[in-house]
Length: 426
Image 1 (cartoon, rainbow, N blue to C red):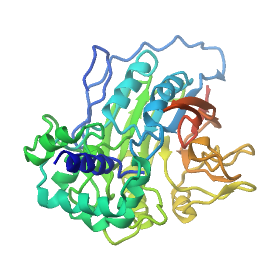
Image 2: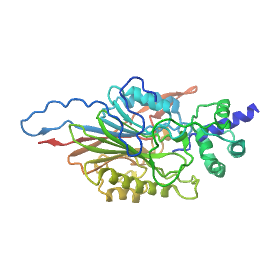
Image 3: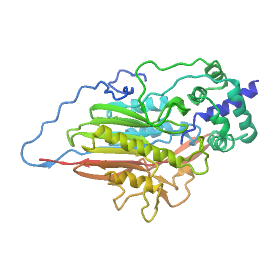
Image 4: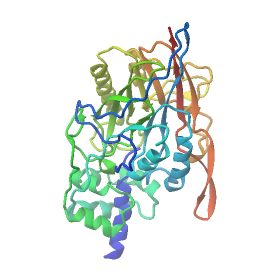
């Protein structure tokens, strides 16, 4: 029985990765607002005194996007990378940061603590579910399939095997069961048995859930966490969120309205769209590309609804789509990227001569092979009157202890992108 549970735990922990707050006395805002709601705001800092004599350059406002690649069980060396990654990210000179793949509460809280003196306002949706319930009739077939077809694989290799070899076992799980199994990848077999097989659902107390586009509740990894968040030193005047149609892992777009004195009011949309996972079967008998297309439909409609088609608008995040740029950047679902440009968004970084890939095949975390890559992490602008220049962040490598050997790795499988916005006062 014990041996069976150990095998079960390995499989069930891997389910937590089917995705590729306590306030400690700080004035941090990390709870989700109700649908269409506005969360309470921190006191606004006093505006700095302005000179009246003629035009002068305004203080720039620096915005950045970064995918941390902290997908436990899918990405390598998550435990080893997390602390140095968060420390290095907190040192970046940014005024507004959109992060992705901070799936686990412990990683999110570590980032909150590390940036508490510089990025005091935050917005992140809480996980959609806590505990649910499973029956042995649900879990036993999955465990048996994995034991037969994916035996002796480590976590980051086990997930692709499960998706390839046992897809019907995964899709056969009820949302409550799947969400429970994926809630905490660190739980051991006894804890998983108590948390999931006792079938004692719990629900988070508090606000109504955010709006959901394109469908009803479905199985979601990490107990419904989206892994996406906004951190800023600007006062958040309004916040809202839309859960996008997706499979397996929750995708959402976060909205905040800020008005930094240096550039004026800005509508900010932070998101992480579904990737085109070649070779991985879709659990709903459709395609990952169609998922992303539906997400872009919902995203663009949401942007127009929140902005009324007016005002300076910022769309940033890992969009998993991008253009081809000679000589070394390959296109990724370019028709999807073109739809964003067709709706008035511009990409200042992609137009620079020094633009480079953000998901690069020579990244040491992915094996460090290849000379090409894709530009899928973006800071897009619409209706902004001013200058915007971009540069990459978090490109350096680090050496980590992996068991009994030292390994060279990237902080993440993505590099970050920072864009400096500036406009002139008159």
